[in-house]
Length: 150
Picture 1 (cartoon, rainbow, N blue to C red):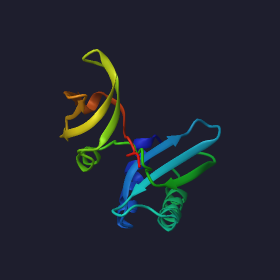
Picture 2: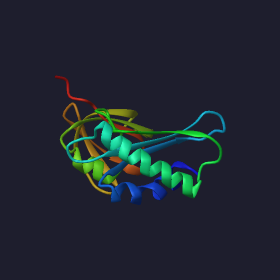
Picture 3: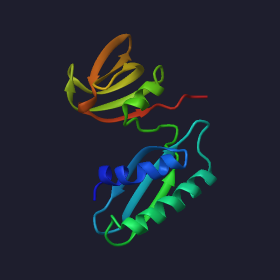
């Protein structure tokens, strides 16, 4: 079972607990397998939140048994440099600085770092040094927030 299938399995249980499944990474190669679950909620995530979700997810994975063999389960917050993977993420962080890596070149470049101006289901708009770039969501390899410097 891949990351997307695991996310579909776990998302309802995580949402019932009052959390958002921000991202999920599954490294299932038959060696040292790891399932990483990133959760979020308004006000942020604490250790108790991670423990609560870890217990629920662990029980669900034990019952459903979607991962063959042994694996480590890690539950944490998305962090300050969180991945932006959903339309809702881009909309929530409008006005923030983002780093975007594209799968293919657009306007002669694959990397964009600038202010997230807007987003919809198909595109995001990033302002880089005063120039707006419309980037298709389907072509984004990775997108992350750039933490504000204090």
